[in-house]
Length: 234
Image 1 (cartoon, rainbow, N blue to C red):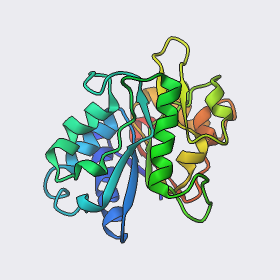
Image 2: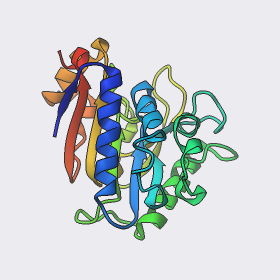
Image 3: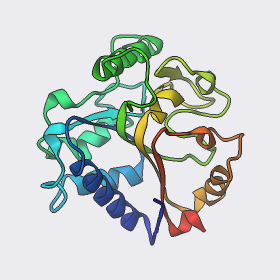
Image 4: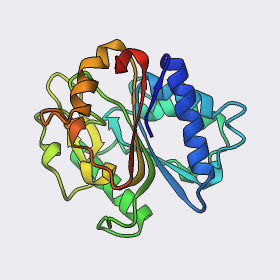
């Protein structure tokens, strides 16, 4: 199911309503991989406010991160901090349901290994099974260079097919921890949120499966959705 919305605000509202409807309709324990960025932030703010906040099954949803900058959790660039300020601190979220990427007191490779161990403990196995997805929903953005999560062009993480998480240091960028393709693809629904005219060209290339762009290689086991605004879609 794809959708083209009028502007970023409409995109955020649509994505928030879709997520609530999707999660509320599913029984049992739920898992969502969050994304950073301005469009997801606007979406998170709506999830924590009426009328959507009362419909989301907060007690059953576990929140993970598709990627995180390797900075302290209180750093302004932290994706965890953004999600907490926009949504999690305003909602009845059990603390045990929040699973941040560890970023303090250890090296970046060790952080990736520790996050993988936490994901495996949650999943209940060390190997992902095609018929049993890790996540209910994975939220992804799209960079102007074609990256998604922190899967950047030219980085070794693009070739990773065994590990669930990896440390990445892109050119001229801070070190990050990212989930790898196998982990991101182990989901029932994967949603790209893309807004802005500066994303128009790269969005068209990804949707045409340009092999040079990391986002083109995301192949979820479940459904792939594109929620875009008119400026990005052209």
